[in-house]
Length: 347
Image (cartoon, rainbow, N blue to C red; front, side):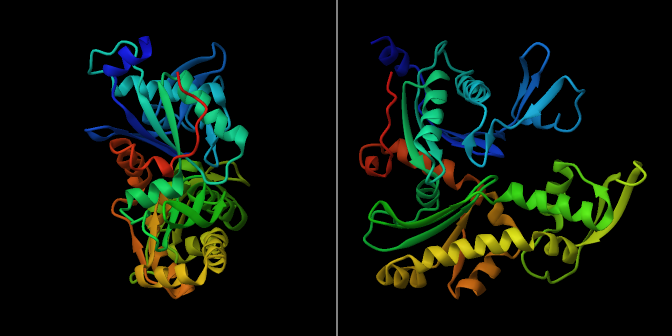
């Protein structure tokens, strides 16, 4: 009874709880939060010092007793208590300008396709303990397809490839359900790791995570660019231990990214192979839609198109596809109820 009363003063929200970023959609308002999924903790006192973008600024720049951690790895909860604190922070931030002292919102939250029962329950429990009145789960490829405005309820095939920070989700959707899919724990983070490994093996240079990500975003590509690009790669020389700078070309970075990109392409091809022929014909007509932050890698859409011999489109604002999908479901829960996963948690 009390939760229903508190619920009237709360904003229902949709959350894309990503490995790299968390985005929050508020019913009737749109996307209001886009912050990093990072939490800074003082190991001595167990106190949380910062959450989100403030915590990300501390990555690799803190004294030994302060750690900046990501509570989600490969799209699933790896640190339950920290995830709960992070979710509570975002829920409270949404309600900071309203009169709700104890927010009890209904929450639609995206989870990777094919997670285990235990991983699923961890997300539900963390969200409930963070203050949610009701928790609705939706698989991320389904949410991304809804967010990209694909006609998921028609008896025709739609294909979505959602490349996030920790996972790549490939799915063929028809009549509100997933017909064929692949969930790959290779995505944006793996691309960053490949750049770090390449620099270490070829230049004896140790790079930080943030530096590798900046290099990927600046000159990373899946195919040769029209105009060659270069960037200064700064880190620590593994032999002398001193600072070192190397000028690196887009061609070398492409070489570094080759293996994880090929694995993503392979997952897309395998999913198409497992799709019924009628739906493959639909995909050929409609094309494949790329979503997620990883889809922004230069010329990735061209490579996917050449590899699958199918048209490929980039979703509008690929990074926010999943959270927009959770928002659309939130705005129309009754008619889109069938796309949700069964949930155990209701206050």
